[in-house]
Image 1 (cartoon, rainbow, N blue to C red):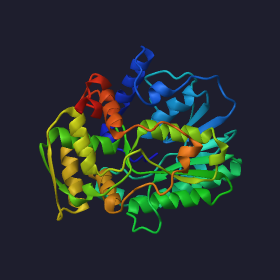
Image 2 (image 1 turned 60 degrees about the horizontal axis):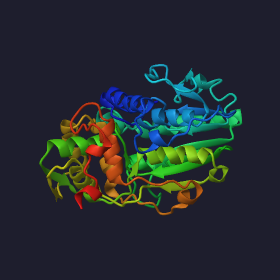
Image 3 (image 1 turned 180 degrees about the vertical axis):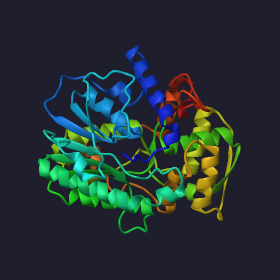
Image 4 (image 1 turned 90 degrees about the horizontal axis):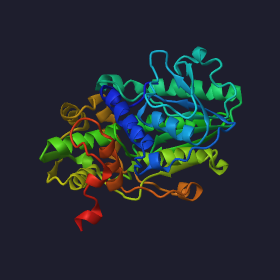
Length: 367
C-alpha cells in the first residue's frame, strides 16, 4: 500500500526484523516488544491489517499474532507479504488496492477492527512525493466507506503529530485530513498521533545512523534543531495493540510520544554517545529542506522523496499536547538511548552493527 518508507532498504529491514525474531526463538530476549509479547490462545475477533508489508505493519502483525488474534492482511496485487519466520497462526492474505474501491469486495467481511497504516509518502524522488495528497484522500475515503458498509466495530489509525492550527507541512496536513475522513464515517475511529518513530529499518533511524556513522563533522540545516517527542517502535506497537484491547479508546484522538523531548541534533549526539563516537555538529541557516533532502539521500539509503516530507514536517515542534494514552494504555516507555540500542542490535548490515544491546554505551555506563 504505497507505504511511506525507504523502498530501497525494505529488503534489508525485513532481514533485520526477522533476525531478531530468530534470536527470540532461540532464547534471546531483546528489550522491547519482542521480549514483551505473551502468546495466547486464538481469539474470536478478526482483525484487518493494512500496510502489513511496511515498517510498522509487519511488526504489528507479529504483535497481534502473539496476542492470539486472527489477522487478515490486505496486500496490493503488485506486492508480496513475505514471512520468513513462522507465526503462531497463519494470517489470511487478501488482495486489493485502496485506490480502487471495486477491488475491496469481501475484504471487510466478518472483520471486527481494522488498522489503517498506509499513506502515500515515499516516492523515490521529490516529484513523486509531492503528488501524494490526493491519493491519501481517495484511499481513506474508500476505506471508510467500505468499513461503514461492512459494519465494522472500530478503526485504529496511526497518524502524524501536529495541530490543525499550526502551519503544517503538506505531509502532516494530509495525515490530519486522513484522520478526519476516517472519523467522518459511522465506525468509531481511534487516532494515534506520533512524531519521529525510532526503529531498525525506519526512515528516521536510518537517517540518523548513516549520517552519524559516516560524517565526523556534521553541518546541519536549521530544521534538525526543531524539538519533537520521538517514540520507540516497540512502544508504538504496544499502544496500537493496547488500544485494540481497551474499548475506552474507541473514537478518541490521542498523542503518543516517548519520555524525552529531543531534536534531530539531539538524536545525532545521543547515537554518537551510544556508539562511543565523537562527532561535531553545528547548524547553518541557509540550507532549504529540499536541498537538505537531496544531500541526505546521497549519504543514506533513504530516498529524497521520503526525506523531504520529514524535513518539512519539522517546521513546527511535534510535542504531545495531552497524555491520555498513558492512563488508558499504561506501558513502560523506552528512552531513546534504549530505542537506538535495540535498533542497532537488530541491524544485519550497514554501519553501526552491534552484536547485542550489551555492546551499547548507555547513560549508566558513561557516568
